[in-house]
Image (tube, rainbow, N blue to C red):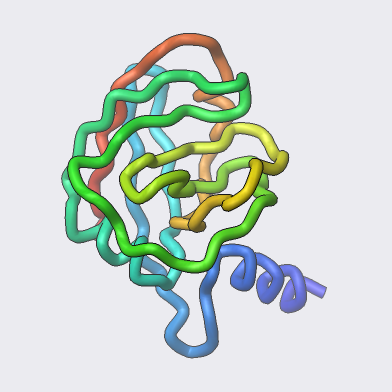
Length: 136
């Protein structure tokens, strides 16, 4: 059963086959730190190349923290549904951390990865600054 759960998680992250990326990043803030596993796609690879990175984020719709990247990431297939802990890309440089599950309007989001820590640290009103760094 755990293999099917792992397979479903890999599909949700955009990971595939033997090329499954295990690149991880740290997301640090004054509210706490979490780790995230990046998806195996061009947008996540481009994000990884930008690190380390500081992003000023604001709360949006009491479901996500959003902030702008310094440059655009590649355009890829999008999806409308997201789960708690999804890292996404709304527009070409609009980074999102979802702290609840739900769906967004069309055209949807590009999946960048999944938080593996307790994403509830972001579930509070207010702005914050996050530091994204690559884990070695």
